[in-house]
Length: 268
Length: 270
Image (tube, rainbow over all chains, first blue to last red; front, side, top):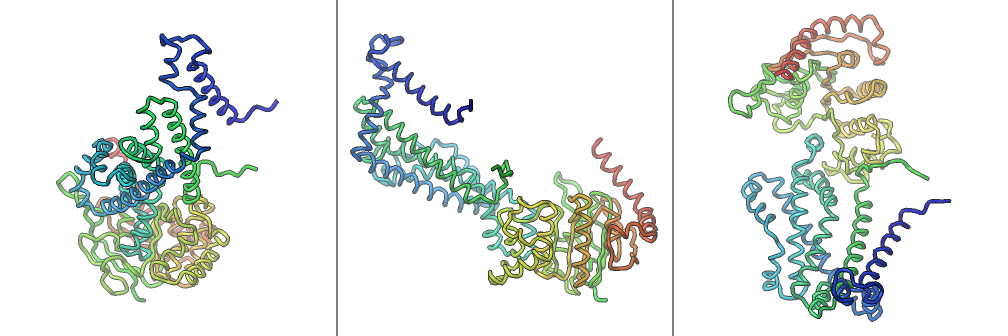
């Protein structure tokens, strides 16, 4: 008999988790183990059937789409702006040792600061719309990209650099044809993390104060002690994040063709 | 014959990191490479061969002494020279063709024209059909061919080569050496070829210069190689004259090699 493929077990595991979840939280299937009341477990952990129902209603009524769209916009804007800023500042500081020496303690301080607490300030500055969430996401993405690019510039192979110089590259050509491609590969190696961070910035920002977005939905549901809807929001966000990650992997494979892969053999 | 590259009384001292005196790599070295001449520089490991080449390329400034390129004092990088590095120097994010045409791109040559010349050079170094491959998809020998084409496409008057084939296996290496000689015979450029392999030096060169063990290295011997050209590097090694020259130069080198060996050994112990 053929062994079932790995995805079979992955899906089986998921189904099992939901079944256990359902049995443990349903008021009338088994007597309460931990709580003194059969409805308590459902109150704290929700019920998978109701969670899926909430998700079903969201998508069928179309209620969720504007919220997802807002969250997606915030994520993409935060990612794009944060990456560009990180790339520019990383290149600049990587190539000007004096500036990087002067700014070093400030960068360390800003990176060490828990930047989520900037959310209230951004709300005062940019209002409750998408831009306060974008700003929060940017502060998260910026540092990841910045540190990677800075490191990337410092670690450009001196031989490749000297070779380009001997081939006649001037300073701006070195920047464009050597430093930038080299730094870009470092940006890509941090792409998964920075897209994730942009997403975190968007959702946390929405959660702390907004009128739209999946984070806002979760916040509303929590206010009404509607734990099922909170879990529904979490599930939607998780799937959404997985989809983003797929897109990133796809882009990475397209754009980093020149990088050696682990396995080079072709299989038929 | 005109002098292509001349180094006069070159000394190089690197500033010491922990205060105190610096490290003198090269002391009072004078070298003259004639136009069209193939000169090899041999010496024990770590004696400062590469440093000397970097001086000639303008990548490094000498502490004292004078560098002249075709009679003109060298300021900045040596524009007349192509440089072939010991380690990987291709840009990994560029295909073989884009690497070969990089120098033309930097000079503002139009893209289609650059690609045309690039294809020609790929063919000349035996890489036709591999233009779209990235460096990691090429073998070590193929990468060296690409690096050679990358340098030669700019038609430099002087070729500076820093142990370019040392990372290759012996068969590939002899193939590459023969190809280098063929390319060199077609339009005689001046070549400064650094190697620690005496056989390679003799079989390729018009002249072999032996450096002393470092620190403060300087030439201790100079040998004209009067072997007939064109040469086949594998076959020429069997001729009596080659063996004679080899014995002669090795005799001069031996002491320095042992000295260099003792130094590195002491460093490890200390």
